[in-house]
Length: 365
Image 1 (cartoon, rainbow, N blue to C red):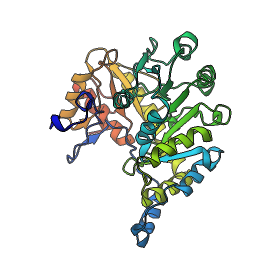
Image 2 (tube, one colour):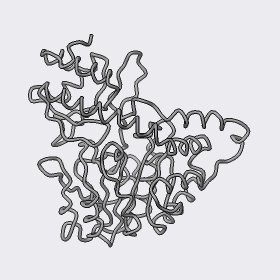
Image 3 (cartoon, rainbow, N blue to C red):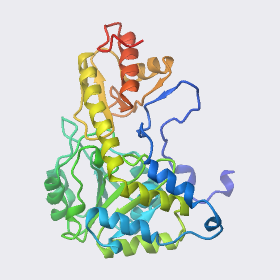
Image 4 (tube, rainbow, N blue to C red):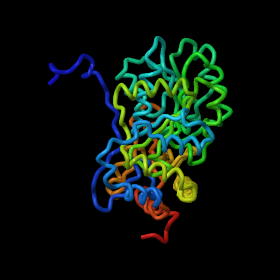
């Protein structure tokens, strides 16, 4: 079929998502999915919305959802852009802001979809190294280092390392680069980091991107959004309406509004994950792991005696999936999604068996 392809298609290197097998009894800790599921109110709202309205096109502007997001963050609805998952929002942003002369600056260890977008749109990449502690250094995105850049993007907290910058650190990066758009991808921010959303009204070059897939447990519905001043939002709308003017279906919009408005469930569910993360971190350290400080719903860890790939394969034999990235600097690490307390206990027991040591959870079968 290559002869029928457009030029450049064969050179594209698509993003590889976490494995999604359908195996009974499998513990999936490889894709950072929420262990507790979406708000019951969101589920009820979607069930109630099924009916004659589905024969009509959804609200192309996602008005109610934009208003719900705006209320949540104390901004205006025209400062919110809605997309079919944050990946689509990012794709539109790359097209709208980064197809200009000069490189896009991004961390050398980061979300692996960013280079995919760059390959698709012909954007030059300049990778900025994390420091020796796997942290983003704001000074590396300022002055001479960022001169001539077409844009800057980074996740906060970073993925897959899980560590976060403070809002003040983000402000220094945005303030130092008024010539280009700075995108802060906050997919995991609700698990303990500071959002950059309060900086939006201060900086016309800041775009903050969120997803409902993680802290709202809406991965199956594909809802994401961006927040920024109207000049940036207008550009995203132009791209969207030139690509797909109805990106988000009616049920997704209704469910997302209810999920955002159900603050009580959100607070409970995120706190459960945070508590399980801290317990999991301590148990991993007891088993001899180095665990990077995490502000996400996953931990990033390495062991002094077993390689990341080997541990990943051994856990598969225990019907547990985690993720290892065969990449420079991090090949020895594994990324482990935080599950329920019982799921974390099962994981720790299995790792102890693999390492042939006593488990911190001896009482579990």
